[in-house]
Structure formats: structure tokens, C-alpha cells
Image (cartoon, rainbow, N blue to C red; front, top):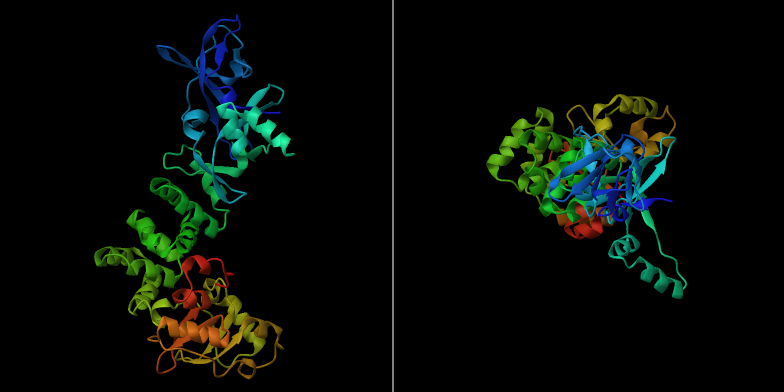
Length: 419
């Protein structure tokens, strides 16, 4: 059975001889890569005297009052990696990594175990029960629930499953980074938008470039540019390189010309070229919403040769959600399309030309987004190739980008992600 920080902070501190030397002001812990954080020291307030830090090994008990093991314990010397539970964690917003949600730390649970009787932070208490306990109404709340046949719900999130996200979060962000990166980018985006501006940016900056890019792509369009521009230019360029080309183009299109040009210059040449190609088209056309990440194979291959080609293809590796395979000649003209399923299920010796769709539905780069959405819906497509008057393949418009013009973004995010 654990004890709670609210039951310790503010309580009297007694030395070995039974003399009251002050009150508990805070608990200092050290974060670990794995498992609960270990209590390192107790901070004691002593009226007008300076705060006293007592090492955890010189604390006999934390409850019902803090009792020390000696009358004159040696002072604890901070190492710089401590976290103060009361001032830096309590009442702060944290991420419940397993629950993929933002919660408030109403209290913190500590347990004692091990041969030396050390204290550890076992979890973060959230929910109504923990809040009412701090106010002194836990008993009355339990009585009310008992009368209606319910039990109080003790919602304690394991310490290893939480991560701080507020702007002034302490050293724990070093550990939180790896925890938060495991969350789906859609959930990270929701958490970022729920936070205040400073805290949202602190969370974004703590992510690696790929995770940050995925999260920005899931944020409401009107917030994407403002999020990106708060990053240092070099970091923003790195994040843009990790984004889908069409998403990167959308963000850059909303920036001032000078800022956009600066970021494009900082990006790698290949990614910058792809994005500039998309920026050349109006944003509400097929060319403006298409992506340049798609999979092609040359003409004249058998099924077996095509599969070997794809395994070695750099563009196929970039196509994270490959569904269609496009057959193009040496001049880049689209000659046919087939689904990846059809390719995998076909006889390896069969010529691809015999199983591909020779007259796929395509659109011109200047076709409006609404017309693309109509075509996608009419023919039940997951994507539509974008070709010019000579039949050269320039990109593809995926179903989610096509329907963005006719379905609100909030609704679109609920759809299955094919791309």
C-alpha cells in the first residue's frame, strides 16, 4: 500500500531525539531510465532559516510524519538531476503514455521496498478521488459512492508510463522523449493542441524529427505553420524533409516568401526540389495536393522481376503506404497501374503488361481538388495518378487529400489511414 505526496508535504519533521526541526517542503527524486524514480532527499523548511536537504538514507520514515535517523544528519548536496515532486510535478500536466491522453498530476504515490527500505515514486494519481483526497473530502466522497453501490476509483498511472510536457518541465524530458515517441502521431497532435502554447512547443521540440513531422501533419492546418516556425530554421528544415512532400508544401505555402525561401534553401536538394514542384501549382488543384512519393516500375518486366525491382527501389522504400504500383516507360509516361495485391498474387512468370490496367483513371495537374474528389468517389479509388498532356506521371493524389475539400478536417482524421 503506497502513501501519497499530499500526506507528506507540510507535515512535521522530527529528529531521532523527538525534536521537531521543521516541516516537509518537498521530496527530491532522481529519474531512472527504467522503473520508478528513487527518492534522493527530503527538503525541510525551518522558518526563517535556509532550507535543509536531508539525504534519503538518513530518513527513517515519511509517514505519519517525517522521522530522521539522527539528530544532525549530513546535508544533501544536489547533483543537478533531481526532480522536486511538489514544485515541478504536482498539479502539472503530464502524458499518460499508455492511455495516450493528457492528464493532471493531482497527487503522487510513493512506495517503500528493498532491503534498505528506500522510497520510490510508483505512480501519478489522477481523477476525482485523488483531487478530493487533497481537499480532505475523500471520506465523504467514498460514503456517497457507497450509498449508490459504487467504489471509489483509485486512478494511479505507473510512473514509467508518464511523461511531463509543460514548458518548464525538468530533466525528465530526457526520458520522456523516448516514451512519447511511442505514441501514435495522431494522439501526439491532439496532446499538443490541448496544451498551452509554450508547453505544446516544449513537447514538439522534445521529439525526434520524424515523430515531429508526423505529428505536425496531424495538427489542424491553420496551426501547422505556427508550430513549425517556432523551431530554429535548421531544425524546421529537417522536420520538413521528414514530412510528406504535399504536406510540407502546404505548410510552406502559408509562410511569408522570405521565410519560405530560407527554409527551402536549408532543405536537402532532392526534398526541396520535390516541394518546389508542388508549390508551383495552385493549392486547390490536383498538382497542388498531389504527393511525389509513389512507386513505379519500368515496362517489360515479369511479375517476379517487378517484385525484385521493388525490393531494390529507393522510391518504393519512401512510399510508406504503397498500395498501387505504376508502370512507366523510359520517358516517364504512365503506361498502366495495378494493385500491389494483384502483383503479389500473380504468377511470377507472367508479364506485368498482361495484368496491369492499361487505361487507368488519371487527372491533369490543373484539375480542381473538388473534381479530383468527385473522380475518386465515382470510381472508388484510393489514389489517382496526376499526368500532363504528354502522359508523363508527375505525382498521385491520395483519397484523404482528395476528399479534404469536401469533408471537414476533424471528420477526415477519423477515417482509416491508407496513406
